[in-house]
Structures are given as structure tokens and as C-alpha cells.
Length: 429
Image (tube, one colour):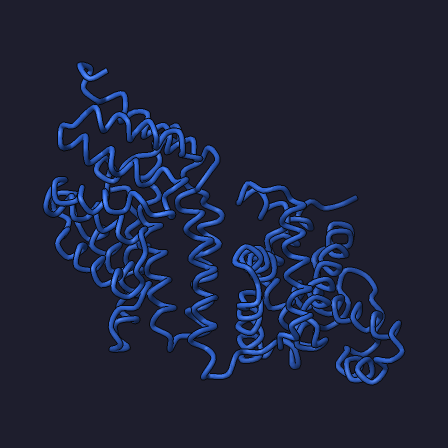
């Protein structure tokens, strides 16, 4: 009779150790796509064996051993790879046969050296987020091989068909193979540019989780949580990089507000209405500590550091009115100089409206009206409608809010916009 705890153990071990397993298999086979397939085969075998015969003493080692034996079978079928097969077989445990739930002692001395694990995991992150991949492919591959998510889970997170996710992952692996991307931590000279891509992918995953672009949930906790986990892994693997700590700080400080951002029925609670006693103080402490590590390097704020500093201003304020909006505006000024974008300008306009009033912010927003960035987005009309409402220009505000509602893809955000529209002066209906 199958033990249901076996399947639960498989899921838990895979989520924790999949990156280490795939990384080790990639190092030993020299083939990223093959390693990912071998790891999936080992996972499938565990789903059959563990519930029936019990969870092995070393679950991760069991999966790795099975994966390596499958690799040897594949190389055996490819007679031209005899030399590689012999080299890999040399590292197998005594006996070689897979019997029962525990295939014998895992080769811990060879495969689970802490330094090698770190190198493999870091190399896997750089490979999954390689610049030859599209951003969508990089996100899907990262969530698959580093996060341990299934194609179904990734599809649900981004509200796309499972077949689309599977196609992205398949294309990504083929692209990496065709480009001859080596499985390695990039040389020191190449790391800054390559690290930017890795951080960008993790940031994108968190952004979609913290402010879902579509669907009926304002926050996708599993997606945001996965990005936080990836950022923590990076901060451990690259402790000398300030922007890694800055990204972790930004994610922790932003996620600290999650408990207060949803009402009892899942509705969105705006910043000014949030009960700050519900903010996660431990997450705030972790975020501030990570930001302190980043600033301790003495290089000044980078792209993620500036955003983390803005998040810290919110985290330490007792209310919206007590928030240091002047500092937030100055930080957005710096962010705009470092990485100019219409989105940064729009966020800066919101901060200006809080620091100096809506009349100072409206010209900034009006200047962004022609930006293609907001052509199909509800963000700009939503902000403009709020500014016009605060200025008492209710007719114009109504037009903007109606436009924002039409463009908004998230049901919970539409509820907020609809509520704002309903609260406009009745005389202006």
C-alpha cells in the first residue's frame, strides 16, 4: 500500500534540492538539457518508489544517484561516448544496482562538497538567465530548474497555458545548446553584465507576484515567495555583490506589507488605509539588514538599492502622513538618472503629489501621456484620475478612471478603481 507521505517527501525534497541535483548532473554530463531531463526522470521514479518502499535515508542523494545512473544508461546507448561513460561510472557507489527505496550510500564525498554545491547552483542560475534567452524563457527556465516548480505551477502563476510554458522551456534548452553556453560561473570580467540579467529575472518574478497583472488576486504569494527564496540563495552565493543584497532588501521590505494589502475577502487595501500593525516586522528587519550590507560596500545605491531605500522609507514610517516623501522624491530623482524610464517618472509623480501636492505632480503625468509604455496600461490614467480627483476636477477624473478600468487586467485592482469612480461627486454624474 502506498504511503502518502512518500509523495509529500518527493515534493519537499525537489523544491529544496532540485537546483543542486540539476547542477551536479550538469557538471557531470556537460549537458544542461540532458541534466534537466535526467533529474525529471529521477523525480518520476521517486514518485513511484518512495510511497511504496519508503523515503530513503538520503533523499537528495537517492535522486542524484538515480539521475547519474540514467545518464550512464544514455551514454551506454551512445557508443561514441564510451570514454565519458567510463569516467562517470568510476564515481558510482559500489554495486551499481538500484534496489529498494535506498540505492545505497550516496556519493557524498564527491557530489555534495559545499563549495561545489555553491558553484553548481550559481552556475545554474547564470545558465538559466543567460542573455541569449528571452526574458520569458529565462523566467520559465529559472522557475523550473532553480525553483523546482512544475510546468503546471508556472503556467498557473503567469496565467498562460501549460503548453506555452513547456514550449518556452524546450526552446530555452535548445537555444542554450545551440549557442554552446558553457555551464560555469562567468569569469570575473563578465559577471556584472551577466548578474544584471539574473537579478532582472528574479525581480520580474517578484513583481508579477507582488502586483499581479491579471487574474482575481492582487498578490500571488507563491510566486513572490519563490523570488524571495531565489534572492536569498543569490545573497548566500554572492555575498560580495551589493546589488544582490539590495534586491533581497527590496523584496523583503515590499513583502513585509503583504499581510495588510489584502482585506478579509481578498480585496485590495490601499497604502493609506493599511493597518501597519499587520506589517511583518521580521521581514522589515531582514530587509533593512540586507540594505545595510549593500550600503556597507561603500559604492552608493544601485538600481535595486535605490528602490530598496524607497521601500525602507515606507517601512519605518508610522503613517502615510509621517512618511519622508521628500527623501522618496530625491531617491526617485536618483533612480531616474541611473535608469530613466516612464514607469520611474510615473512613480516619482506620485511621490511628488504627496510631498508637494497634486498640482505639482499633474504636469509630470501629463508629459507622460504620449509614452508608448502606458498605451495599453491602466497605470497612467489611474494616477491621473486620482490627481484630478484631489484637485476637484471631477469630470476629468471620471474620464480617466473609466479609461483605467477598461485597461486594467486585474480584477482586484479594477475593484479599487471602480470604488474611486463611485466616490466622485454625485453632482458630476
